[in-house]
Amino acid sequence: MNITSVLSLLALGAVAGWLAGLITRGGGLGLLGNIVLGIAGSLLGGYLFGLLGLRPGGGWAGSLLSATVGAVALLYLIRLIKRA
Image (cartoon, rainbow, N blue to C red; front, side):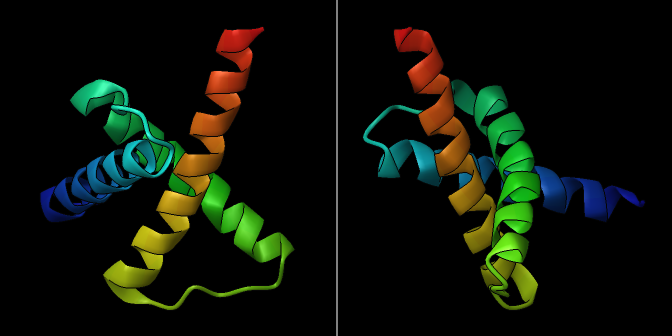
């Protein structure tokens, strides 16, 4: 993995985490938290899309969609746990 791939992954994670914060009407988790949330969300989103037999498409748009859906799901779970 070269430096360009790492920077792309971090940028995608940050954007997906930020979008998830906006979608769930929260402020997100800060820059580092949004990056971690977005990267973890991309893994969960890919898994969820696979379970449903869906393919979001290739490139940035598909990756961003999958990561954002996963990040929203993770943010929802985090907020459920904080309430308990």
